Length: 221
Image 1 (cartoon, rainbow, N blue to C red):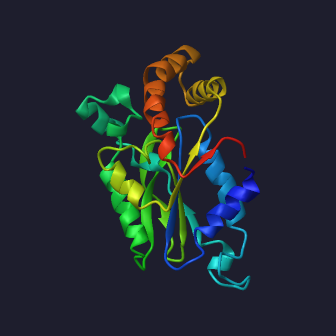
Image 2: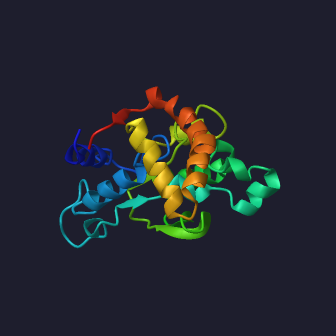
């Protein structure tokens, strides 16, 4: 399935009234954020579904927004307090309740700007209120590892998602990307490879076990 088809699928989610949420999931390193950014670039081209090409807020591309789950990482100070610093990226190292609350507020169509945390890769820390979701937003793209996890707050998250797409990639390339990412943000090649083997791959196995719950599997785009 190519990017044009995926873009059209995303647009069709908004064919009726109300707000919609599209989740993008998959193991670390498969390119979830890259896919979301490609979709956003196309979806922000007016008009939005059901809108003319005139000068409305929707026509300017404000009908679609992006909130990554990574912004709900617990800060390192909390991970150290909880003894989870070496598990960073595991399900229990996220504020899943906060993420759920934001999605609930979004789908309830609150008539105000909603603010969500972002994630600063160079600092490896969340940034409070880094993302603004305007009231005109009809479609929210959100990506993260655990959108289909069947425990904790994650099933309640899944209920708020109108569709979830699972992205996959060949294992060798996925691991290479993960190691390169860690090196780019300050780890030595040896440290990066060790972290991927010890931590990222344990998380990847958890995510891979949720593949069958996805509405669509994306492996070529």
